[in-house]
Length: 218
Image (cartoon, rainbow, N blue to C red; front, side, top):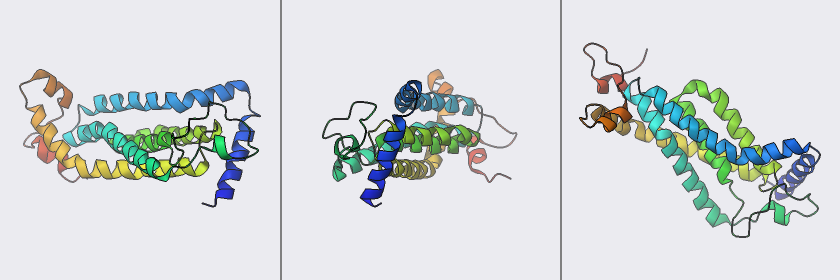
């Protein structure tokens, strides 16, 4: 993306942020962090509701936070290579950021918050499709809030969202089968905590849990 375009867009957004009521500004500042906590709570809910289903459902729910963590690691690794300074420090004539500008060395590209949000939104949607109506808007709003409060360029958050979503999808698809096999074994464990974590599942007559988890669905 042309640097002049993204700088101008950043300047327009932060200028707009300063015209909003103070409660909107405080809410945006809060959401940049509270959204992460809400995603964490949704991970727990997704796992809990999946425990009564087949092992594939449980595997997807259990893998969701792992996939999100991998998305963060990839984003952080790229951030350490690019070394892009924060816009709140480099964009001339822009209004002050609504939150303290991160110190030099805490680079801007890509946005780790956006990467985590993008990864969590897609991972949860794969584990619990209906929740996408909530998680996708949550991720987009979190990404926008990082520009709104003045600590990221628009291209930082867009890239972060894409990285998180792509990485999370890959992790979920690659690991769901081995994770499901492991959970099949855990469900037969004599250790109560292990069996409780994997969940009781459902068993149809004459169908093993492993076959049930991976057979084609009508």
